[in-house]
Image (cartoon, rainbow, N blue to C red; front, side):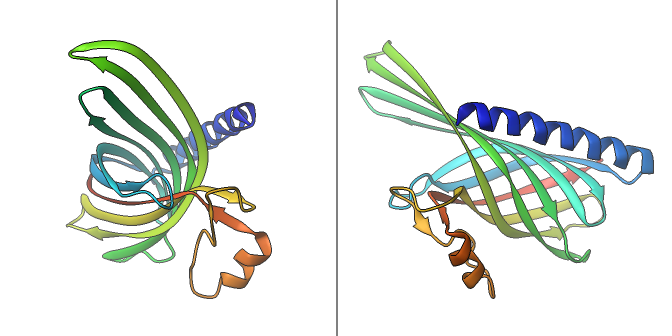
Length: 201
């Protein structure tokens, strides 16, 4: 599984580089960067946790953009410290180009977690795990002038074809797609709200 996602990750990065190169040749791209906040539910039955991070967006055309985002969250008790830092690579598709521009988002994410066992200020043991999974959702950009947007979207994470243990059926409950989702046996294991501001150069 890890090898398959590794090969897919290389393919995604190569595709992003190709798109960026094409956009650069056409003079159509615009680079944006900014902070973002996420409210993440890592499991369908878990409470939401707040993450902070940032994103980098490349507008490859008036209807498409590429995004790379990095978030961070730490939860600490007297005996344990847990650090999560997911990275997502996404393609954004804009059906219309307006001041309030809705978009579809989809891509792949790499989710790392480090668990440290503590005794006072001393770290006794440290273990790190990594998972990869697909995500997809919908959102919108609100343009604040010509160079900045306010972003808000909702993403389902760890989307799969099939109902694994702990998953929920119907990864993308959009109007008119329920029958298609049931036929494809889609499922997901988490979700997240993201919001932030992107400034373009």
